[in-house]
Length: 210
Length: 101
Image (cartoon, rainbow over the protein chains, first blue to last red):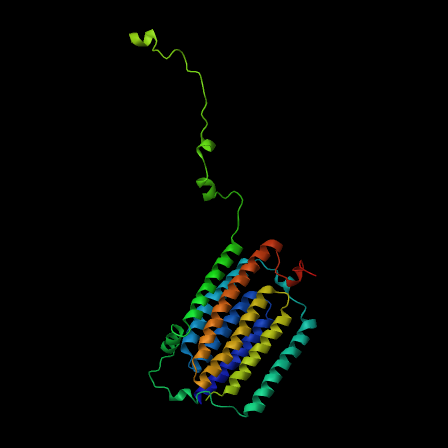
């Protein structure tokens, strides 16, 4: 019973936060409301006993992605009023599409499964010391090791792409050109000038006397 | 106990909210990216619910990979956004009509 109450409370918070996120004017407030959405979702996933994913959601999304969002929002000097769409024209259309989506899924779900099956029906038989993280890790490093490596490569590519996109070439920045330095030859740097020597090359008599 | 129906309806509500958000904030590129994140979250919620009800951990692994791809996507998307803002001094989607056919 407590689990049900918690679920409904979290579901209400999640829906309200999502609704507020898409309607607030300030992008910083929208990002913070999205953080609330992720946090509440992590709580719901904990209720579903997906502990590892709940922690990963908070670490990766709240800790990294949303901080990146906030960073970008605060770094760019955005004119909020300018990018704000005229709500009246498209809000109605968006609401209709959203209503149709919800109606379709709800009607399908309710006609196919009635009041619904209990989510914990299968998993309730798991032992008390069952570890979600250990099970995921077991699968991730055996059966899914190749996709796992691919995901790592994907993240590396994303890092390189993001850095190379945003790297700025400032004027007056002194940089080394390694290829040019290696390719340099003796003739580029020194010039041998043929000159007639001064005098006869013999020490003068005054120097000899001294 | 939590029923599967509730999870499906919750995720469909989240999905619908994020789709409506794309309509409402169709000019603001940052909010569009945020709506995409919310949309992926609602899809992940279905994965978690079905993984729980079938007792099959593979669904949770799929969520793991979706999170990876979503993180990479938002990083590159924000990088493009920063470059765009430097170039145009605006993040209005309607200003991006250079490739209009």
